[in-house]
Length: 354
Image (cartoon, rainbow, N blue to C red):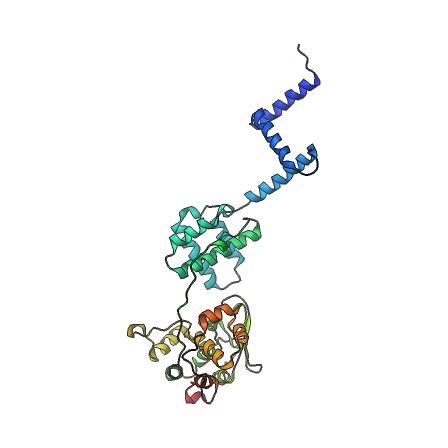
């Protein structure tokens, strides 16, 4: 029976261990050589090599930890349950469109996605620049959630470059148009529609925010409207000043309970009829622009008070850029018209409001 020296037994055991891994002895030797050459630092002992392997294992595990795009969307929607239903529906709509247009996206690991892939999916799915910008924002939200969960190492949506979105200037209403709106509201529904109309026009509150607003958010003594996170579009709260002209309007329709909504029942239909009665009808060549009252508020506020910092705060913007680039259109507003807009005695209100 052949006998082996201790060194031979060690070599036999080593060969057996390497064979059990499924790689060849030559491959194992190359790996060890590469490991030792890459250690750097002080010393190249076995303990340092083992530490390198352990750290590499952790890094590899972290890199492989991820979920599919579809799972990322579901987790993002769960994380944003506190946001408005309209916001959640918009996220779901955009992501569903993306996955329908790019079927491979549904099972794609978030960690493996890169900027150009995201940009291509957006352009294949959405044709207008506005939709593409919105899709980029939604995608960025998905990756932001994934970053917090450790499912990806970066947010590729932030690197997507799109042509700048050029906002079309919205003409603010003139005093006669404002008078016509209030006259139509009174003629059709008495004072029921005056508070929401006044809040949109004289406080710049968005139409969707007004629909969610209740009277307990309107502090007539402090003369401020408190828009809670639940009410606002962006999910943040803000306070908006009640100017004298708006204060007079709000006093006309006092609620029976503080928790009552500011808008009357069937508000959407009533508001549509008020606009049509005042002459805004797409079929007749005069379509109603969704945010025209908010733009009107911003333009007359800037022209009269000339306080952009206050206006930015009351509009709920994080900076002045959006305000100056999109909302201010004062070239057709005279100082006299701006004074009339805010003056209870000279405003665009129907005489009954004064």
